[in-house]
Image: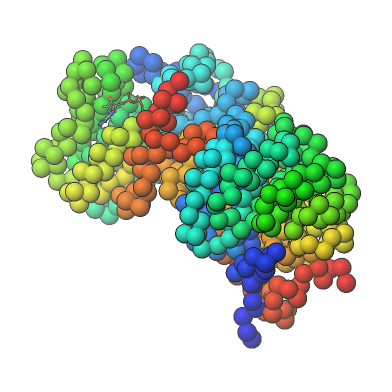
Length: 306
Length: 275
Ligand SMILES: Cc1cc2nc3c(=O)[nH]c(=O)nc-3n(C[C@H](O)[C@H](O)[C@H](O)COP(=O)(O)OP(=O)(O)OC[C@H]3O[C@@H](n4cnc5c(N)ncnc54)[C@H](O)[C@@H]3O)c2cc1C
Ligand SMILES: Cc1cc2nc3c(=O)[nH]c(=O)nc-3n(C[C@H](O)[C@H](O)[C@H](O)COP(=O)(O)O)c2cc1C
Ligand code: FES
C-alpha cells in the first residue's frame, strides 16, 4: 500500500503536513521555531506580538491539570520592533511562519503589521479571542461581528498576506462570527483560542493558583468544544479552518479534519507528548489513513458533514 | 506525609525548619519525600505573590531543603516566613547533572565550582561525589556571603574582596589545580560570566564540563518559550547542559530574555534581576 500524502495547502501556503504550532507555544524565538520544525511541524505561529513590549501577568501563569492546562500568560512579548529583529531572515526556517498580532483598536493592529512588513511571514493571525488579558480579545469586546469586521478590514487594507482570524470557543453563534470575518476579507479561521476563563484553587492555600486568578482552558477539556466549533464554522464559511484545541494524537487530528479543518494546531499536546508530538501525530495519521484507505488529507476534510 | 514525590501543581508544604546560612542566605527545610536528581529545580509559590525556580540544596530520606539568597521582593517575603508556615512547591523539573563513565564507582577526578547562590545547586551533586577525588571551590563577593563553608571538609573559598579565603575568582586557580588533579569533569553553577570562563578552560583542556544555567522562567515545563537559550529550553532541556550542547548555544555567556521576551545582554539581564 502506498504511503498516504499529508501535504496540505492552506490559503496557497504549501505545508508538508497539516500540523501547526499555535501562538503562545515556544514561539518566542527563531531558534525555537527551527527546533519545532526539526520535530516535524508543518508550519509555526510566533508568540502574539503587540506594538509595545508587555511583561504579562505574574507567575504562576501556566498550570497543568487532569484535563489539560489553564493559562494566563497575559500576552508577554517584546513588542513589534524587537519581534521584527528576532524574526528577520525567516528564510533560514524551513517551514512557513505566521505572525500573530494583537492590539486594542484597529490602528494598533495596523501599526504592528507595518513594523513586521519587511519580515518574511507567510500569513497574519489575528487572535480576537483571548479570554484573560484586559485590553485584548474578548475583554476588549473583539469577539463581536462588528469589531471583528473593523479589525480585519483595517489589516486587509495594509497587507497582502493571508489573514487568519482566531476565534473564541465562548462565542455561541461562532459560525456567524466566522462569516463576519470572511466577509471582511479573512482568508482562514483559526478555531479556537482557549476556553473560559476557568479557575483552579489550591484548597490548602485557599487561593486560585494563577496569579491572575483566572485563565484560559486548553488541552483535552477543550477538544470536544473545539471540534464542534470547527464543525459549525465549516457549515458557515468557504475559507479554510485551522482546527486547534486539545489535539495530541493522529486520531484527534483526523477527527478535526473530518469536522472541517484543513490544518491542525497542536499546543498543549507538546506538554502531553513532548516536542516531537508533531512527528508522532503525522506518523499516526499515516498509519490510520493507510489502514482506512485514504490517500490524502484533502479526501477527509469535512467528511463528517456528509 | 504525601505518597507522591513529584508534583505537576503546587502542593502546600509546611516549613519544618529554617537555617541561617550566611548574611542574607537562609535554608528552608521540608519534611517531604522528593524525587530529585541533582541539578533539577523546583518552582516555589507564595500564594498571591509570585512563583520562582530554586535548586534543592538538601535532600534525604523524607526531607529536602532549598537555600535562598535575599535579593528582590519575592526572596524578602520568603525570608520573613517562620517554621510552620506553608509555601507551594511544584516539580522537580528539568534535566540535572550527569555522571559519565569516567567518574563512575569512585574513579576519576572531579571539580565542582559554585559561585554565589549557585552553590545551592551543586550541594546534592557534591554529596553524590564523595567517593571521587573531589575539589570543591566556592566564590562569593565577600566573607559574609559565603555559605556551606563548614558543610564539606575540603572546600576552597574565594572572595572578590579578599575578606576570607583566597582573594579573587575560583577560575584564577583552575590551571594549577588541573595540572595537579587532571580533572575528568568540571561541574559549575553560578554567574554565567564565571561559568563561561570555566567552559573556555574545559574546551581548551579537553575536560568534560557541565553547567547549570539561569534564565527567567514562566511555565517551567517546556511550553512557553520564555527560558529559551538558542533553541534549548533551559527549564526542560536544562538547566544543566554539557560542553557539546553549550558549544551550539551562541547565547550562552552573552544573552538572556527579559520577562517581556526581549533578548538582552547578560549585564542588562543581571541589572533587571537584581532589582
Ligand atoms: C539552576 C539554578 C538554580 C538556582 N538556584 C538558586 C537557589 O537555589 N537559590 C538562590 O537564591 N538562587 C538560585 N539561583 C540564582 C543564581 O545562582 C544567581 O543568579 C548567581 O549565582 C549570582 O549570584 P550572586 O548574585 O550571589 O553572584 P555575584 O555576587 O554576582 O557573584 C558570585 C561569585 O561568583 C564569582 N564570579 C562573579 N563574576 C565572575 C567573573 N567575571 N569571573 C569569574 N568568577 C566570577 C565570584 O567568586 C563572585 O563572588 C540559581 C541559579 C541557577 C542557574
Ligand atoms: C501557555 C499558553 C499561551 C498561549 N498564548 C497565546 C497567544 O499568545 N496568542 C494566541 O492567540 N493564543 C495563545 N494561546 C492559545 C493557543 O494558541 C491555543 O489556541 C489553545 O491552547 C488551544 O490549543 P491546544 O489545546 O492545542 O493547546 C496560548 C495557550 C497557552 C496554553
Ligand atoms: S519557562 Fe516556559 S519553556 Fe521554559
